[in-house]
Length: 462
Image (cartoon, rainbow, N blue to C red; front, side, top):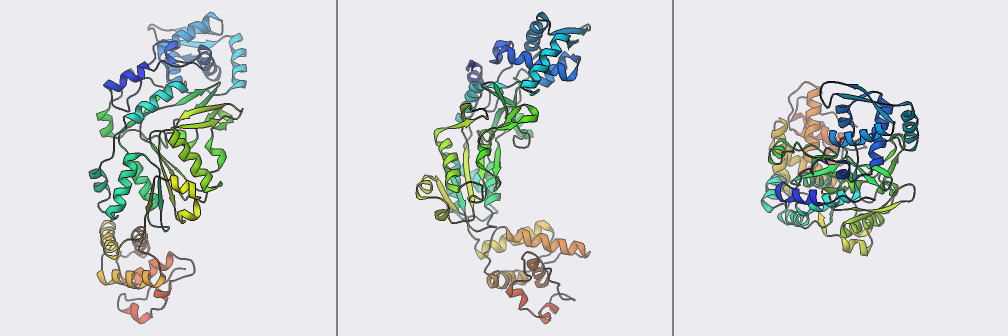
């Protein structure tokens, strides 16, 4: 494997923000890629698209005109390609394959159908990931306090969340389902600061791994663009992005932790830990995956501790890739029943996310009524806490107010009425949340009770 001189990446660290793109290669040698790879990529574009304008080649392959000209001159000299048309300007040129070139390109397509942005070398990617990891802005106490000011997490929980994010050590959020663990994890991911450069693809051995995913690698926010403007001379093989947040759920299986063949496109898809570099990897619902929780935890935590992932391609090629990510697990199961003693000891921060206090639950409920335009009523809220929650044994979870209020609004909208918080509308919303009908506290109420709050009795939706 050819190594790319890391000096262009190191030099930008002194003058550019942490997410700055590396400089644009000016020659084939500057790309760090074998000439044959670029020659084959160009030939396959011409084979698929026919006569092609030079600027269109730059768009498809994300290589500069100077680099493409160097490779195209070689193709023309070898009678693989020829100039089909030339205009007045230097870039107003169209190329096409010769008859012999079509035969060679057909063979290259059979071996690898990948026709996309030129990759970067694994060495270049390592250098970029390490540089960006060293320049990651740290989350401060004021940032965290401002973000969760209205969420009523105890100060001790906020302190643990902040310390875990600051240290980069692994986190395990545990507590009852509905306590807001998943939402909390994603909000922590959104609080990551700074930008990162992500390559469209990597060259590993003789194969190409697609890494950039626009669904995960989000474009910079407007204020971030102002703070770290892309240079016009930047390498177009890289994309400037927000720090990624990659969330995995119960569908995860062991085979998804290595690059997966994308046979129709002739390449591989990057595994989640590679996509999460310089960001946050969330494993939600730990214990529901199609592999043991301990094995999954050990696989990711070892990669985080070693700062590298040991990966394999389908042909048996093994390689090591950088792994510089924050790692967060969330579960509704008891940690000691989920992970063995050794794994549990290696968890950096074990953070319990439990029920809210009655006072905080009331405040949150009032705020969310106001935000949703639902007319608030204090006696009705007391009924929710003292009878519905207490009678059913359901804790005062952070997810409950929004869920209940949204259902009150749904029923009111369907009936063409303004949404109101009453005992009857609470009963109606509450019973729609549970299989088997109304909970015991609501079912024990009589129609006479409802007559004091609405003209007509509430209907319990099963």
